[in-house]
Image: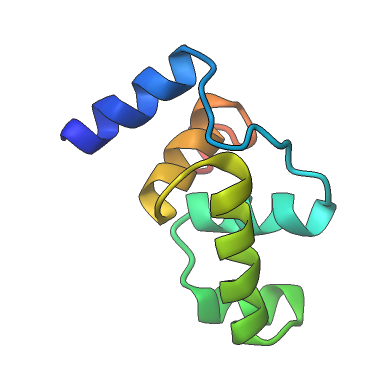
Length: 88
């Protein structure tokens, strides 16, 4: 629970480790699918890429947005309205 508070606190204060926006449609699709609860294997199939590519892309997205894991990424996506809460 402390992790959730930390993430929301950072977002509310506009804090991010890197603060870089998502720049590609591919990144946005990955974030949306993660927020929907899809594992890497499903994301890979839906985007027609290798599962290793999804993993590498996720780590790059984590670094870019300053989140540590899929849960924080999903919270970030909902909070920043990258996805609707009904999609997450």
